[in-house]
Amino acid sequence: MENIKFKALEVREVDGEFKREIIKKEINDLPQGELIVEVKYSSLNYKDALSASGNRGVTKKYPHTPGIDAAGVVVEDESGKYQKGDKVIVTGHDFGMNTAGGFEKYIRVPSQWAVRLPANLSLKESMIYGTAGFTAALSIYKLLAKDKSKEDILVTGASGGVGSFACAILAKLGYKVTAVTGKTGARYYFNNLGVKNIISRKKAADNSSKMLLEKKWDGVIDTVGGNILSTAIKSTKYGGIVTCCGNAASANLDLNVYPFILRGVSLIGIDSVKCSQALKQKLWKKIASEWKLEQIDEFSQEIRLEDLNKQIDKMLAGNAKGRFVVKL
Image 1 (cartoon, rainbow, N blue to C red):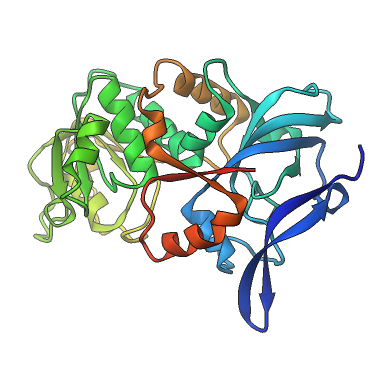
Image 2 (tube, rainbow, N blue to C red):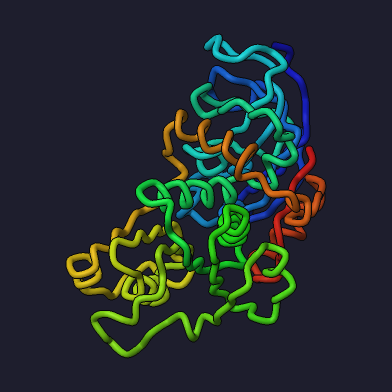
């Protein structure tokens, strides 16, 4: 195709410091791949903020264009899977980490990294959900896969992206959701999500060293790890399922085997990066249909590529609230 010029956010290392700026790129600058997509929307995630600040645990080589989410229109697909004009979502794999991501007008990726935008979901809405919403959906899918009769569900890190979506979708499905958050004063926010019961991080973390705790939860969606996760596991009822997708509190898990061998609790790890394309398509269809949230626009604020620098700094400082959708 024509070697079009377009705008992109680029992060580069200058004298040991990482600088972010809007630059002009060309199609020929893009990495290898069969699929070229004109990006309409992306979204800002914490992983993007880390990549944009030079975190080599996320991105090894610079200069780099972050953005682990993108939604847009197919321009060209050498694999033949997609036709020009098809609407697609690109998340997961190495997108936005060590492969140029969604903070640019055009992307080129392997065709298997994309899924079709399902009916009843706009490109913008797909990016309000983004990786955070998809991870929440994957957690719920695994949580309910064996037993849909669960009632009392605990969601940790509930004010974050994954936690907020998990709370809202579970409440929509009729479950009694208890939210663990450091923002216990944000009752209005959680009531809007359908959550009535809120507990603090302090109450959610047991320091007694007991092998088992009082049975409280039919299931748990954990996004933070550490002592809050171990406490939740020890408080899960017989046969309950606990999913784990994050380590904001700690990557360590101080735990004994009793919840697993005496209560039959299952701990399931959640990874949205290498999730199969077939399961991705299935879950995006659920997000667009029976799991779709009526108040989805309330989750986000639309920003421009030029606004990203400021919002990245706010996110790294812990001052960002809600989802930021980037209109390209």
